Image (cartoon, rainbow, N blue to C red; front, side):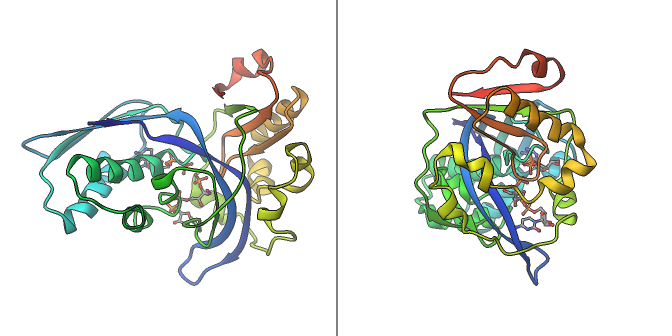
Length: 267
Ligand SMILES: C[C@@](CO)(OP(=O)(O)O)[C@H](O)COP(=O)(O)OP(=O)(O)OC[C@H]1O[C@@H](n2ccc(N)nc2=O)[C@H](O)[C@@H]1O
Ligand SMILES: Nc1ncnc2c1ncn2[C@@H]1O[C@H](COP(=O)(O)OP(=O)(O)O)[C@@H](O)[C@H]1O
């Protein structure tokens, strides 16, 4: 059985306080985008994992798909599977690709082995695999808070826009990004700001990681400026970076950016 885990972008990201458990409370709007991996499981004599496409740093044993398998195996008598992941979502991009794989793996096993898990039960497993994993269970736009794993519905529809995603040739680790942050309460609630017209967002909606990450990786802020210059109505780094997205009314001409960076269109 095969599934296609997709990426997310963050529309605004406020890091509001440091928590006792070492994590941070945050406020963001998660929005799914159509850049996808392919993830397949086949029943097999032995548990195995292999990947193709973009190389995944680290030991395959620590891949989130295997972690998700072992987590479910504790509670359910699932047989061994052979897992194949074709990686297309850029890594260290702030696009949540690893988290999407983990959450889609839980959904795939639930479906293939008829575990009859509710979405809420799958979200509980996903929360144990990473802070932004739970979002990918329902995989629809939400306002997220606490560790980024509690949700409220939000009305936001970007289907009238072309979403352009640029991945500069730098990787930013999530831990590095949080390390440079001084948490502070947001001056206005993101839930309120996201209801403003998209043309107003650039004056009000921010990503708290940008200041510090832009200082260390000016190439990322150059991409953001280039997107505004090309006519973006709103542009921002996604999550902890390094990818940057722009919202356009029409597909822009970005030939000059395409030469230096990887570019993806989600229309
Ligand atoms: C920053 C965000 C914003 O959407 O996404 P990415 O840009 O990485 O995709 C998320 O908070 C990333 O969530 P996720 O990537 O699942 O984080 P985890 O694997 O659980 O944690 C990695 C590390 O990030 C830090 N962390 C993560 C989430 C959070 N609310 N507070 C934190 O301080 C912790 O240092 C933790 O050890
Ligand atoms: N299935 C996976 N896909 C990508 N990365 C994974 C996966 N499993 C574990 N990882 C680890 O998670 C790290 C960050 O993953 P990713 O979710 O792609 O980035 P980001 O948090 O910036 O969105 C990688 O450096 C990698 O070591």
